[in-house]
Length: 53
Image (tube, rainbow, N blue to C red; front, top):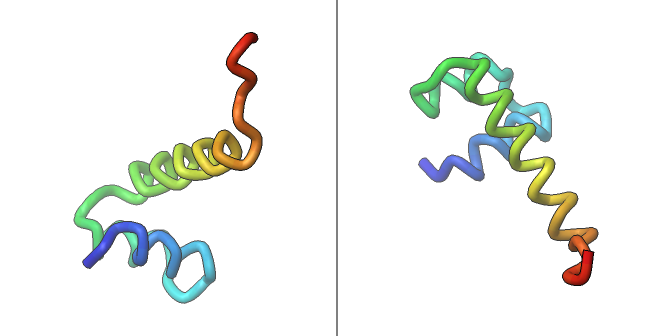
């Protein structure tokens, strides 16, 4: 299963973080980190950093 779909299901409240971790085959702490990293990359895409600093 696509990791993004599993994480989206968790973010929408369809599954718990423990279920998400079990589907992905990783620890729930790792899932939390993945979600935090994904949120940070989404913010960067929405508000790109200026090229000239």
